Length: 227
Image 1 (tube, rainbow, N blue to C red):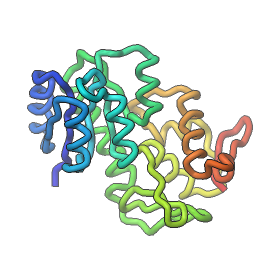
Image 2 (tube, helix red, strand yellow):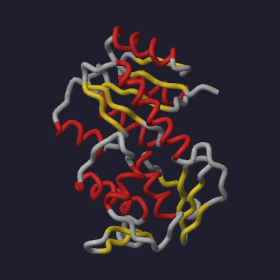
Image 3 (tube, helix red, strand yellow):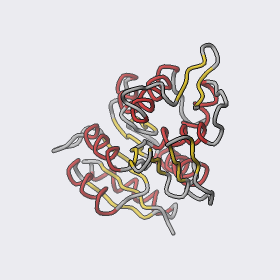
């Protein structure tokens, strides 16, 4: 079964170009011309990945991204004319998996889609048949790529999911920032120590807002581990 890609961009030429290349690659493509339509399609069509423009009418891409992350951890690749580092960092911190600056080579866009799909659905456990992974009250389900604390579902981005998968399948093991970066983001994207720290901080708050260090421990000078 082919993966379904949502292209959310207010420029019809860009949507048509991306559709052509993605369909040639075997993907099923759906389109949204504004942010409101994008959010509607995410809920109705359940795409496997979203290519998301920032500058869109009605609802901008950042608000669309925030809306997606409330409901889903699907990969999101931002495509935007805003290529300043601050814009990229904002997008990543909001839960994007990758950032592609306009103008772009459509072959590069397809390569990034392929990479995100491969990391999330193949390497990230989407195609792996495993038993549930449990650490204390936490339960990780590799089949559905979901995390629960007791009976409560915890919404994770795809990067956050891969980091929790790394921690929970090796409880007590200390992982360096480099190891966390390689497992969470992969070799196709460059992130800073600050990006990793922000991601860990958000994970801690999601796991236990009252006691952020209850699960993920900092080993000074070494890295992080879950206990």
